[in-house]
Length: 545
Image (cartoon, rainbow, N blue to C red; front, side, top):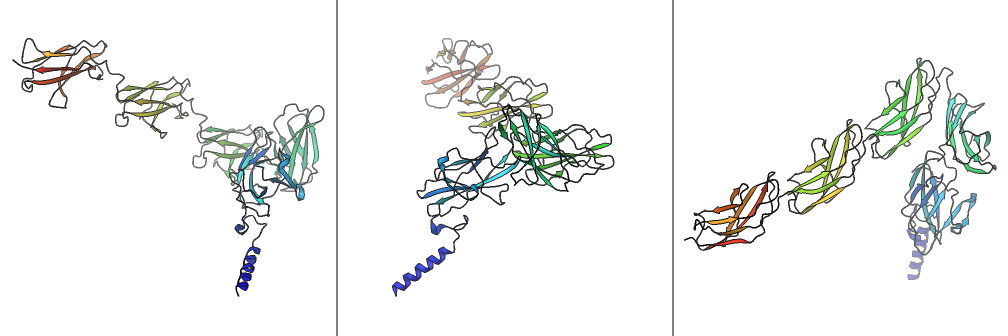
């Protein structure tokens, strides 16, 4: 009976495992002890190259066999394998169908330059396979926006005209332009050979919404192919014969903190009424952003509700004539909004801070040389980097004394930075940070008194005579005298004097006979700063006669 139970359990386990799909990386393969999914996948475009690099963390599982990489132009779209590059050919362990390469378990990076399209997001994901053909789940996808370094662009310039432009490339003698109607075909036809960086192609026998793909190839003086651009494509649209010419030479730049400036060449048609501006955020829909026609050739987009930091924004414009006819759209141009403000003044320089008063800190900096500076804002943090502005009104000088007694405490570090503000309220980035420590002393206080002496008064044997040396500071206002007796631990202020250097303590009602009395004095300057107590250990035994 036990044997039959064991057979039944084995059959049940096999039946369960057979329902799992080994070819689906997202299926639950825990029965097969699938590899961990690749982690920390990162994607970047290599600087100055039309190449994307994909990296991931090494998987140290002992039975790992290979990695496979897939690419898509949409995060949740269809992913496909592609012909990637690898600097270490020893990491290629197998050639699959359609020249698909597999990477060995030692690989942690590849590069991709296969059929990349300018100004396109590419998403990548990685999965691992072990020696038993168990596949991991997909890694988290990572993406980069690919930008062709040659800035190859195509736009429809008229009914059957396509205008191409690109950046010049060093050491190139001539360029060849290729076109095809289906970018999956390899047999692109040669359209032109040129030594300049623009070309207008004529497309014959086309119908509405036909798509055409182009690329350019550069050759040196020995007719060697030096580079090949990414593909660029265009969908041709029907154009009215009465339409104005499309706007040319659109330029887009990050202009203010959250604003973008557009400029373009004036349309030369005699009946132009104005222009409409269209904006897109990444791959969202295009929106017309101006209600009224723009009648100049500049526009500042400062829609704070729509423009966010750390995002790309794309624009094109259309010309409109007096009869309401629209032109073809201009080229699409883009810019990136970071956290800076291009219109802001320069940041303040040479910022210094010092412990200034008992509970105050003084800051000084160089004057900003921008012509439209209105003032400065001061920011402070205590021990950390949570900065808060400390001035209510703009500081128009190049120094500031922070004497906020409610916030500045003894034995603490305080960090500061300063920002310049111009007449349009643009605020600069923060200056370099400076800090200082409040140690409990008062750097502005006068020197402590010296030569302090106490004795019974020779003229009045019931009084105590006190004397000291004059303080040499130029702004001394006077002195404070403190006393206590041997039976008390509390010091009492008994006199506030002017510039004199002696005092007779004749407080008969409070002086007790045959008691030790202790004294110290402090100097006070004209700003009310008080020195430390005198250094001399001054006391007297009170013996009135």
